[in-house]
Amino acid sequence: MPRRRPPPGPPAVRPDPMLVRAVERVGDRWVLLIVAGLMDGPRRFGDLGDGLGVAPNILTARLRQLEEDGLVVARPYSERPVRHEYALTGAGRELAATLAHLSEWGARRRGGPTGAAFHSRCGATLEVRAWCPTCDRTVEGEEAAEAYDV
Image: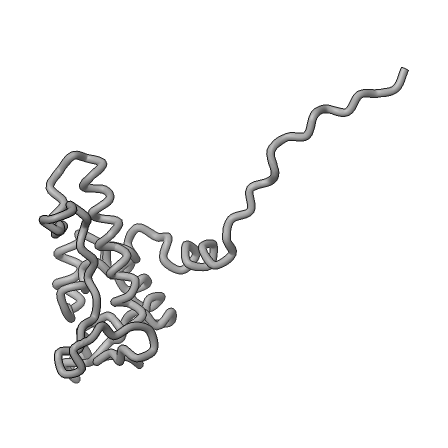
């Protein structure tokens, strides 16, 4: 009697390779929290560590990783001893914008206040965009230069 083949199952899951690369770069809890901690502007090492409650050795390692990945730039503010403040690069600010969306999503799932702005006519969540007041238009992509890009 011939053997029966089992029915075919669902196709294999193949995650988007670009998503895999992004998660490999920023999938660590502390990396995302450090980026979020820099959203409002540059911070000194101690301020970041105290604010996030992260151990100094972990913070040092993650800041180095973020620098290597081009998401954070370190600028010295003291020579003796050498001390740095950390700021997001353009790429880091792009990531920070996605974290703002993630935070909004989390707040909605918890039923808490989202802080999102809504269009009063239709109720849609408003999007934040780079705006040039001189040219009176939205600026996107390569056209948007960043102050701290390296």
